[in-house]
Amino acid sequence: MIGAGGIGGYYGARLTERGHRVVLTARGRHLEALQASGLQVDYEGRLINCPALALDHATLIQTCHPDEFDLVVITLKSTATEPVMEELGDWLSRGAVPVLSLQNGVDNEPLIADRLGENRVLGGLAVRIGGHITEPGKVFAEGVAQIVMGAWPKAPDEEDARLPLLRRLESAFNDAGIPTSVTGDIRYELWRKLVINNGVNPLSALTGLDTRSLTHHPEFGKVVYGMMAETVAASKADGVDLTRQDLDEMFDLIRSFNAIKTSMLVDKEKGRPLELDSIAGAVLKRCAALGIEAPYTFLVNALLRQ
Image (cartoon, rainbow, N blue to C red; front, side, top):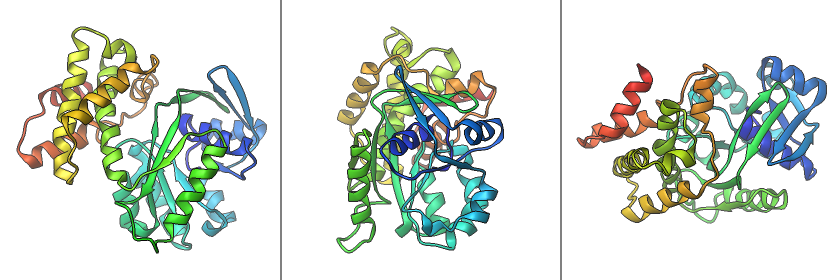
């Protein structure tokens, strides 16, 4: 599990709790705490203690062969995808282990595939989960915490080696209490999640409001819907045909969420870089390619950068 933050830490803990051997990667004081006392996850009031092995990337490269693992999962911020592929790309190239991205945005899988080849890439998304590190060695997570995964960029033929693995992962994750499904069109699912992410993440960072406050606000709710509509339009640039039905389903879904503090709001509060390029930036880039305007996303993105 490359990145034992709120998302990676939660999923790693659930898998470890079920008896799977999991290696977590981290750095700094968080890594020191993981190595000294293990990981503790507060999931909606239940504490999960995870004694998984924790390493930094240099030690991972020195002590492990990639094919010792059934799967490498990247749960880092999308801003770290390119740097981590520079850091771990040669190591991963020594083997054939598949790599699953559980990250925000629609540009992570292409970056991984450019380095390793599409036949080793699984796309994925974490749905209805919020999570973050509360202090070194401790993570808070909430929500249904579903996973949708699939072979990148689309359903392979029946002889593709990823299909049996996807079925094994689906069974193992569900058995560990992680609601998981496999899709034949992961790019479509990633864009549906980007509809939600672009709708609430940048605006929450700008206003300081959680998802429920935003979507039920008489003015901001309309902005959320507008930014989601712009994302639906942008999907056409990637050959993904999202519809008004997708837009309304995603808007109704985020309105029904618990009051989740978005990852971008948490990053802003902690003074960390924002995933603007992979969320609002991805939408703006594709709208520009299509020659269409995205005024809501343009303004919120500009205000956050300012």
